[in-house]
Structures are given as C-alpha cells and as structure tokens.
Image 1 (cartoon, rainbow, N blue to C red):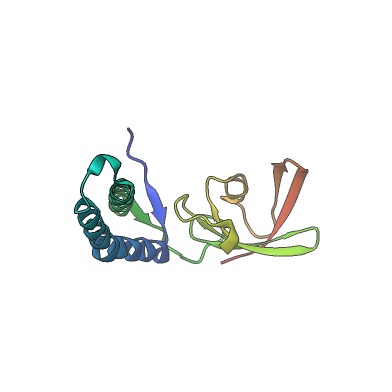
Image 2 (tube, helix red, strand yellow):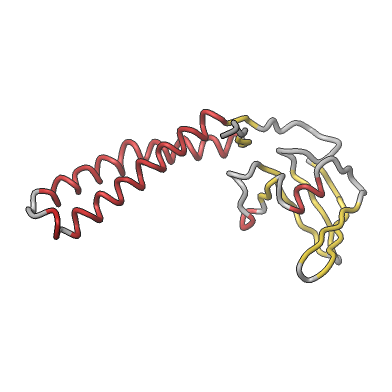
Length: 153
C-alpha cells in the first residue's frame, strides 16, 4: 500500500491528538473494565454483554491505531497569505448573488457543515490554483454551477 500523505491544519492535528488521548486514557480503560466484569458473569458462549464489550473494545483499539497512523503521516498545512487558492486557504466565492466562504483542507479534516472542503472534492479541485476574480465551473447533478472567487485568505 503506498504511503499517502495526510494533510491537516494545526487545529485538525490538535483535535486528533485530543481524540487519541480520550480513547487511550478514558474509553479504553473503561472498556477493559467492562470486558472483565462481563467475563466474570460466567458462560462466555451465551454472554451477550461480553460479546458487545469485546466488540466495542476492538472498535476502539482499531480507531486508536488509525489515529496513530494519521498522526505519523500528517503533513501540516501552513496557512500563509496566498495569492491563489491552495491547501489551508479560506476562499470566499459568489454564486447567484450568494456569498460563501470555504476553507480548503485535507480529506481527513473535511466537513461541509463547517465549510471545510477537501482539496480532492470537485469544488476543491476546481478552486486550487485560481486567483481572486476568476470563475470556476462545477458539474453537479442539478447542472453547472459557476462560482466567482471574491477573496482569498
């Protein structure tokens, strides 16, 4: 499997580290205790609480491993003043009189509800390298959408 870079902002890296801390220091110990208590109830073949506790523990251990890998592969996005759209920039666009501001982030940090879009999304790909005043066109299920870049931060 090729080594893929994981692009994160400082904020995204901080959030991952906090999630890892909670999983390792709080959730996993509680799950280990839950498994031990369920095991003490006897016959494991018919003990649904034991099976559920082991499943939750396995999921948590898997997430811990995933986060550790993401942190190791993380490349921090430098948020410098930019003249063109790139990873880490905030871009304000206008579409049909409506103004929207997006932050271009890596795939792991993308969250459309927070206006954080991935550089690999259709809009992200269209915006990369563009400058203030330029227009980008996106093909969407409802038809073509045209955005004009108003500001890059």
